[in-house]
Length: 154
Image (cartoon, helix red, strand yellow):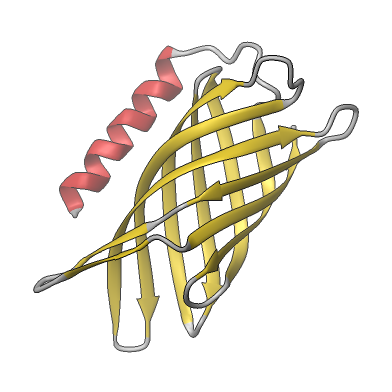
């Protein structure tokens, strides 16, 4: 797990130092993230930062179901032709759930839509984010998870 975080950190640092932000809908969004579906609904702060037109990093600290969840996602973004302000994205990353007496590690792929409201500093995102539990003796796949984000953009 330490190796995975090191690799993700190096990728993020590389993206930060070698790309320029060009014509994406916004550079940074900060707001509320909601992770819902099968299981507990999780709510907490969410941040999404675009390193370039096609690359973004999203981080969330969510609370619910007597646990705290830390998530980080690297995302590829592209605009939808003819839909001003609407982007689609594809990506994924690690998720760590902390609860009384332990923790769980998940890999979370995602695909979604991100809409920047024209004339207002607001963005709304909706994505599908199935979860793959990685345990010491077993694994589990939960396809019924979704994310919703409301962010102030700057």
